[in-house]
Image (cartoon, rainbow, N blue to C red):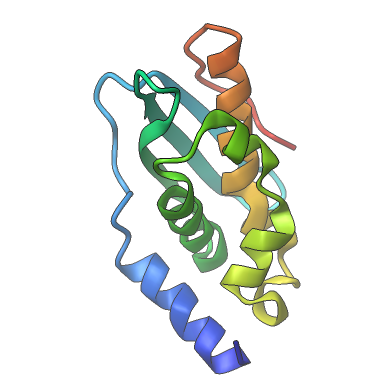
Length: 135
């Protein structure tokens, strides 16, 4: 993906998120943030009877990269198993967002994935989660 295409993709994710918003009766909700730049994201999800994360929603504020990444991660991982989420590498998200554009802000690009992985860990421990930063 060339630089201009990556920028357009980021803006599309940022301006037209499908997964943004609260999730009533979420099985887990985890808040994450980058204290240095002020980006915050809260990931909510529900797990179905087969162990798949069948609904993911996010709330947050911050730069275009962090919020676009939250949409991408939500879109990509909705329907995935907990193990698939745990195994997703940060480089995959960085590449899909456009490495050339987001590598100046890798913490922003990976905030949502780190928060989602933290939510999986909280879910596996059996306690609904609220809070904590995946730094």
